[in-house]
Length: 169
Image 1 (cartoon, one colour):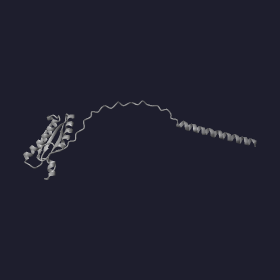
Image 2: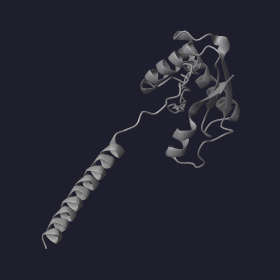
Image 3: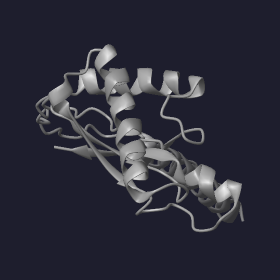
Image 4: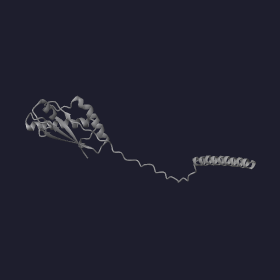
C-alpha cells in the first residue's frame, strides 16, 4: 500500500511539474510572439523637389460701367474700379482691351453712335491717365444697336447707357 501511495505522490508531483512547465512554456511563447522582430528595411528614394510652376496672373473681372442720360462723364463711383483695372493692365502688359460704348434708343442713330464712342473714349482717357498706353486700348461704338435690355422704361434706358470691356490677347 505504501508503494501505491508513493506512486500516487510521484505521479501527482510529475503532473504538477509538467503543468508548471507547460504554463511557463505558454507564457514564454506568448511573450516571444509579442516581441517585435527586426525587419529588413529598404532604402527609400527621396523624390526630387518639385519644380517651380510659372504662375499666370489671375484674370480680372470686368464690369459694365453705366452713364447718365445724354452724358459721357465717368461716374464718381466708377473711379475706384478704373484704378483696379489700370493696376491689372499695368501688371499684365500683354493684355489688350476693347471698350465698347452703348446708348439707349432715344436720339438719332448718328448721335447715339457718337455718344457711345465718346463714352468709350472717356474711359480710355481715364486709363491713359493711370499709365496705360493708348495703343493697348481699342474703342468702338454700338450706339443703340445692341441694347442690354429691351423696353421703353427709364430702367431699360439706364441699363443700355453703358460701356463694356473685352480682353484681347
